[in-house]
Length: 130
Image (cartoon, rainbow, N blue to C red; front, side):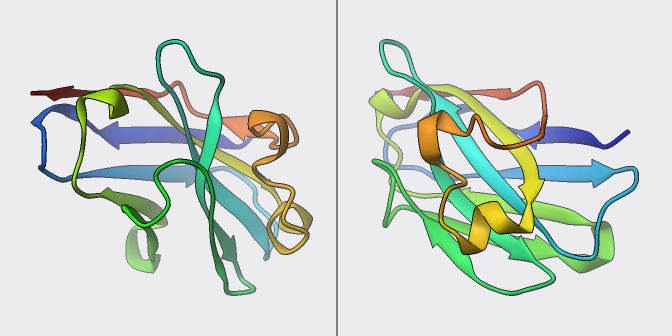
């Protein structure tokens, strides 16, 4: 069973930055899609960024485009999300998810808030104070 675990987050002042980490464990294919999503109050879950593991390619979507960067730390089997210029309206729960490689290269990873992704972490809270 694949397990996805997020870490990082917490409270940050507006204008600041935060980096979230996502570690995946368990059996995985040689290529797959890792992505970050968020749910903020009053809004549906939205995709933020995805990384095509084993195939290359970074993909961005949603209202944070331009303020987030997704990257991978191969040595720790970790995918990171760097978020900059944070605003109070970015306050919410941030999730990491794994899906098939197809979701990345077909561009469907963020469709419907990520319902096509297979494995999800429990999420981490990020709170931005003004």
